[in-house]
Image (tube, rainbow, N blue to C red; front, side, top):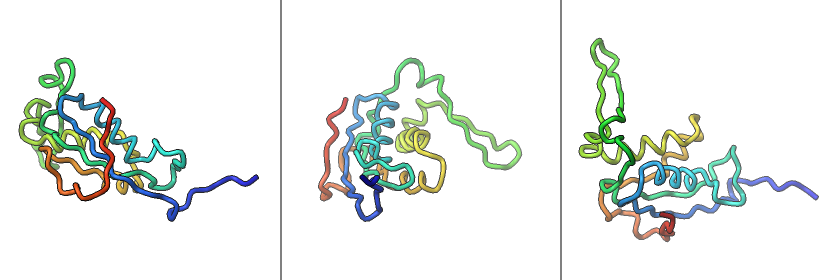
Length: 143
């Protein structure tokens, strides 16, 4: 009996549409990361990008639990003296809701070159409309 090894030619990619309206940020990010990495497939392989494409719609309508809107901070630095900036999650959700979801999913993906390939298959949109409607997709039933 031989061990089966997944080849890149054996990988079939599907499209998953996740509706984020009224759902918690971490749950949506975890579900998206699972589909992006391919952990839902029986032929999951850590050294290959065997995941699917994920489209997240209604990013503006995402929710968070507790006091995270006021307490959770996002930090960045320009590299110049005095260039440290911080923003609250509530402010960031009003101005850049796509960044919040992408940042949450990015934290659940491996930090290497394969992770960059995996993250490229993530598409996030503010409203319900997206340009990937012609793809044969699977609408997420998890909630």
